[in-house]
Amino acid sequence: MHATGVNYYDLLQAAGINPQNLQAFVDGYFADKYNTAKWDGFSFDLFPMMNYTYQQFQQELKMNVMATYVNPDSPTKSRSTEGFELLSGTIPTMKTQLERDEKEVRDLMNAQAFQSNNVVKAAISLLHKKVDDMLGSHVNSISYQVNQMKSLGALTLVDANNPGGIVNVTFSAQIPTANTTTKTSTAMWWTTSAHTTEGSAADPIKDMKAQIRALKDVGVIAVVAEMDQLFMEDLLGHSKVLTAIGYNTYVGSADASAAINTGTALGDDARKLVLERIIGCPIIATDHIATVETWDKPTMAIVKTQIRSFAADVVVFHPAGPLGVIKHVMPIIPPAGANGAIAQYFNNSLLMRIHSDINTNVQYFNTTQAVLAVIDKPKYVKRLVVLA
Image (cartoon, rainbow, N blue to C red):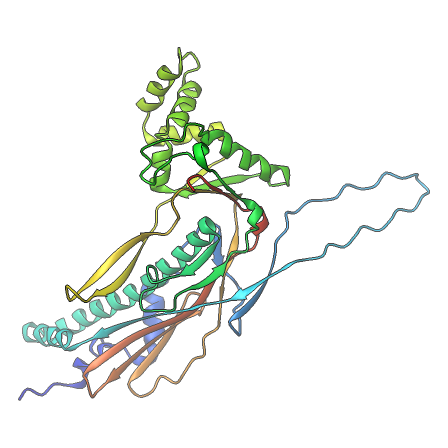
């Protein structure tokens, strides 16, 4: 029989970290890596919610009303006070769990066999990896939320993006229905999801400029277009777009065929710059991939599936700069217990718990966070669906 010390089963002890100092470890190693993560147009709300139902003011564009011309000795009417509209909804909860099992315990024992201080090095490395994996999972989940809210106008949980969790639940961005324009029939930019055949009446540049103009007509001065990276690459190869890019690059092109040749000769970066100049606004190409994990029973294996978080065949137009906030619920902090430790992250919205089960020799790493990306200017978000 081989007897071992408790430090082999408690990763914090093996790393020489007092359970009370788990927060210091997290703050020290991950101060900048994830807390400063930027989601285009979104940041954590300064104030946490105390429950899972939120109310959010719908932001209006800042417009100064002109003064009224009157006679020098005449009074003027008081200006009207501006009312406000509330957005409301429910904030979902997401969790992760990792385990430290017997194999990892034996790995530390092997490290001890070579040199005693190798245990501390190996334990710190393993602890860092597990914390990093969990925090990274939440960053990816929030990124997926943000991109789904912008591109689809909602986060809908289904088995494909939330296996093993709640399904058939939708969290809406409350973008007005009238703000979505869908191209159909021959006006679709392509007639197949593979983007191999173009619609005969497709006019991507005219369609995009119409959406930009619609936002400028209601006072949005700086407009941004946003789309999936792979979709943008296909758009830059659309014949109508290549023709416009070619003519814009060389106004002396003899005909459309010559203009396409000019556009084709440019790289994607150069084409993007020209397209931005043509439509009159910057283009953000979002290239985020989320990953979900499922158990495939026939093969008895874990399968990881990648999902692009920004929907294909959608171009979103919105004001430049802040677009919304990430609402979050303040977690209830339980006692850590004799075999546990706790820490917080992401404006204290994420609760991390580490505890050991001496009956199974397994140490559990858990995180809990209730967050939702809320667009606070939904009336100024336009969605152009180019393939019905």
